[in-house]
Length: 286
Image 1 (cartoon, rainbow, N blue to C red):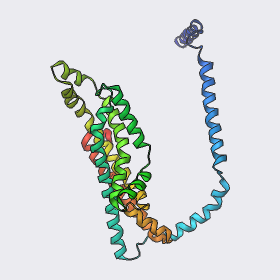
Image 2: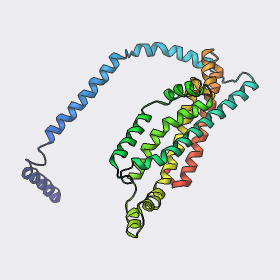
Image 3: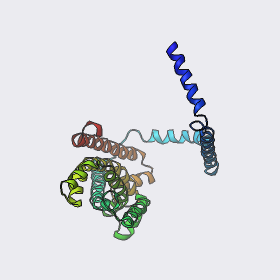
C-alpha cells in the first residue's frame, strides 16, 4: 500500500510540474476528436437521407428474397451438357484471372523501381510514375472491361486486358512501397564493399521483397477470380456471361449451381495460395 501511494504522489507531482506543457493540449485534442466524430455522424445521416435508406423497404423485401432463395434450391445445371459448358466457362474465368494478374505483375515490377524513393533519386520521375499508378488504379476493372470490349471485341481477351490494366496500378503501388520498406543494411553493405547502385538494388533489395511480392500476386489471383466473374457479365467471357443470362431468364436453379461452382473454385484457389504462401515466406504469410 505504501508503494502504491508513493506512485500516486509521484504522478500527481508530475502533473503539477508539467501542467503547462504535457497536459495543455488535451482539451484541444478532445475538441478535435469530438469535431471529427460529429462530422462523420453528420455525413452518415446525410448519406442515409440522400440515398433514401429505408429499413421498412428492407423488411418488406425479405419475403421476396426468401422466395428467390427457395426457387434456387436444389442447385441444378439442368442437363449434363450444360454442366460441361458451365465447367468450361469456369475454366475460362480462372484463366482470365491468372493470366491478367500475371501480366500485370510482370509489367508493374520494373515500373515500381521508378516509383520507389530509395531506388530512383529523380523526383520528377517518381512523381509521374506514382501519379500514373494512381490514374490506372482509379479506373475500376469493370470500366476497363467496357473499354477493352470496344477495342478488341467481346471475349476473354478483353477480360485479360481489363484485369491487367486494373492491377498494374495496384501492383505498382504495392511493389514500390515494399521496396521502400526494405532493410537498408544489405544495401549499405554492398555499397560499402564497392558494389554499384544497380548491384545494391539487385542483391540488397530484390531478394528481400520477392517473397512478399509473390504473396501479393497469389492473393490477387484469388481476388481476380471474383472480378473475372463480374466482368464476364458485360461480355468479357467466362462464367459471368452464363450467370447473367440465367438471371435474366429467371433460371434460379441454374444460378445457384453457377454460384456454387464459383464458391468451390474460390475456396480451392484460396487453399492452394495459402499453401504456396506458406512454402514461400513461412507460417507468417498464412
